[in-house]
Length: 423
Ligand SMILES: [Zn+2]
Image (cartoon, rainbow, N blue to C red):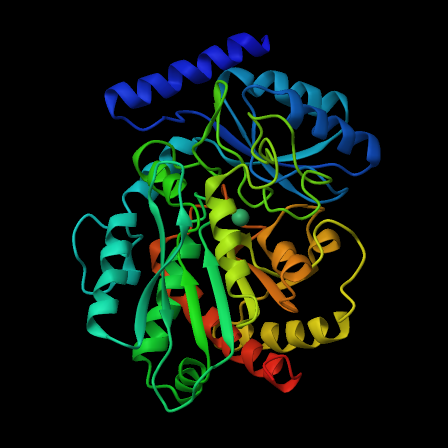
């Protein structure tokens, strides 16, 4: 199919979704896991990712022997499998009707107030009302912050938690989630952390809350999050139009080694780096906000999903941070703490080697451009061998995910403290 016809179809789909107010359907779309075992096979997958108008690669194709998930429309299945067979590329069907999985997911969005807000996935409006209510309920201790603006003119709303306990300037910790729209577990976990800092009676969590200033942005990409609820569950990027395609990958758009590696110049790609560094207003305004806090913030954390990884810089180069020994130490104690409650296994390391090269990420920006010496990225549940598209984490796993991550944060912050980064 020519690119133009492909673009026309995308336009039609978009128009249909907008005029009917309906969600994009994925009836009989399949999800495959594919694995390139050598350089040639990897190049072929990369070419498919770069040129296809209809295959949706849920992971970037960057590493030999790393499984990637691909959404394949029904009319492309036979062509797709033929290419894989002819080239002896391993694959595995993990979902035979994506629509069924997505419908289950949409049913997990809370439609009314629940007694436990972490028993379902919440809307952006709910989270924003909740953040505002916290500022009213904890005057002086919780302040609304605006990390920036979105293309559709939403606020990138968050909270600063700074509890009065006689201390003046306290070291800052920045937590950003939801920069990838479809990774619903990330904002759910970030809001859980906010709640725990304010209400937990656990001694270690109280210490975290009282010793540091927390800057928490649950939705770094609010337009995209809303779009995953209203129109397309699989949306990852921002919503700024680029010709007939929409959005850039906001975690490839930060002004650090922009578009050098692990990103795409094709506006239709899932990892489109944008037209320039900071071309996305979300990234431009959020990075300015992070800049303004660089003398306060000592630890930067970003929540994503999926794969159960803990990652640290760099993503743009295999070169390790000069304080990599400290990173390894923090990484080890954090992984141990995460596994304590539910035996959940995380792995990871430096972004470039542990997952794939990725330039222009928030964590690299924090580390390389602001002087924040400790910057981590969590890829939350499920793990990579999860049989499905990776986004469909049952809502009853929100709490366990968030609980084990809070355990991890307690250990992480304490170790960062021991190493002297908060002095
Ligand atoms: Zn992500």
